[in-house]
Length: 137
Image (cartoon, one colour):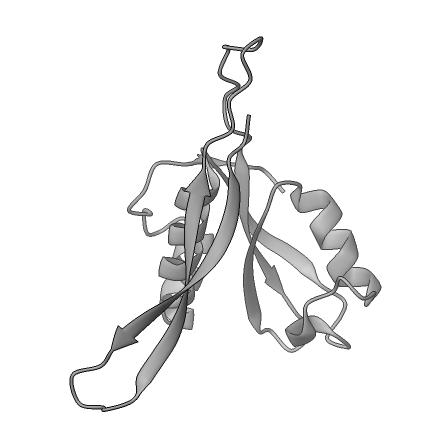
């Protein structure tokens, strides 16, 4: 069973300010099912890099990279704002990661890299600092 989440507003005092700031905090609720004790392995997540017609690189994560590429290419409501009207899009790089947390960390790390570093990673001249398996495009 997947845990459900609920948000609770937490009051935090900043050292330099006299005002209070409200920060939403997520708390995990464990839901247990007495009949099913088997743990299902987490679904693999994919990190992908797309190139626009202007040679800009876009990085994203998804459970299904083929579906996500179609959504980006179709300029539908589910298309990322950064990609609207920038087609045709080409998939340059795609890797499989074990879980969402790792995928999000990898995406953040890759987005912080320079374009030259991203190109070196795409052409596989530079190794990534996390375990993954390469998906052939």
